Length: 221
Image (cartoon, rainbow, N blue to C red; front, side, top):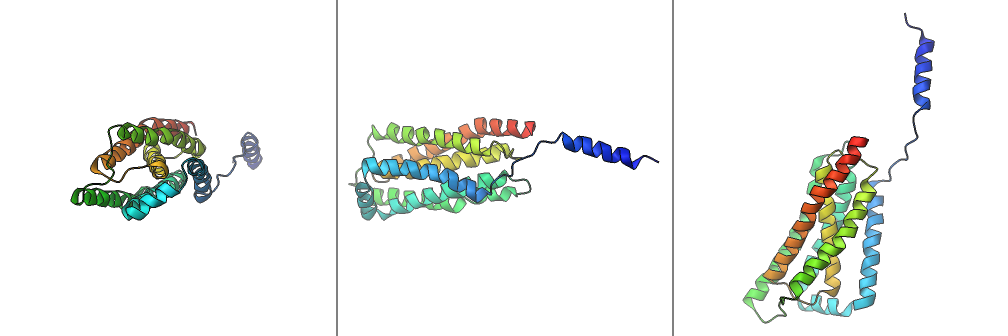
């Protein structure tokens, strides 16, 4: 029979080489940390532009307010789902959590487009506004995505591409909600198309690059 003392010695030797692992904070707490950064950006934009133009635009077109709320809900749900999916044992079905916010976001925006088509004469999107909206959403999505990937780096998610898609969706939705503060046009089909293009671009880039980064962390782990 084998010597039990040698087993204990082997276990002790292996245990001595293990490095302590710092426990990850809960997904909701890490989500709040990321949202705090988004809130700081929003506060800076409000200091610069003020809230009066945004509130006046919402009073004239309540669908814009609902679309903004949908974007905020999408950002919160997608960020939490990304952090939650990084925890082993969580189901992939959590990726559907942002869907209600996305439906509200797109549905309210589409309602604004329909109203503009039925009753034209609103402040429509000019050609110079289209690249501005695209640059705004993509420009703010980049640092927000980088921050989310950095916060997820220790988690080593087992579904890196799906997690990266949620990172892109959360960042793009947060950027679209920030755009409401300084957006001076009503919802039109062109405006909605630009937003969808920007969000799709951010999600695609995150799926490609963010998924590769998160996947590399998981392989190392």
